Image 1: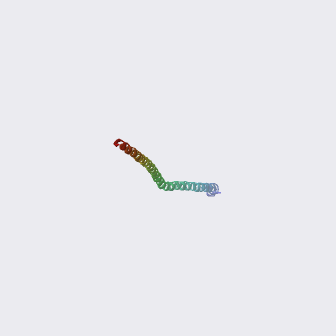
Image 2 (image 1 turned 90 degrees about the vertical axis):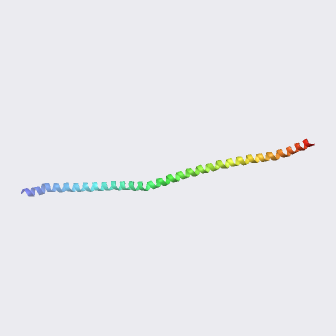
Image 3 (image 1 turned 45 degrees about the vertical axis):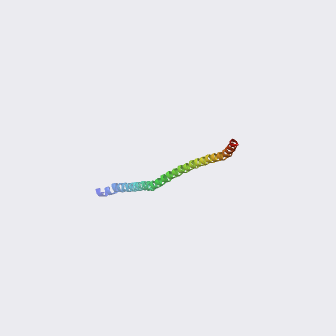
Length: 111
């Protein structure tokens, strides 16, 4: 058996098997890297979509707080107006009740 034949039978088979294992490992590594890259792209796209959504939610929350404060301010204003209205109404009613008594006292004083 010459040296070339020996090399082909011994190392050739080993080398072929080694190359197959390397190709399989390389394919497995490529598949893994591809799935990791896909997950990273999903995170990136989710972040890009989440940014405007977060901004919109912040604006909506701020607007809702503003509306709640404005509603409370109108409620306080309405209560104050009602109190003023009652005070004016009570004062007006007191004047109408005092006035006839005052007139009677004047008539008695003149007589």
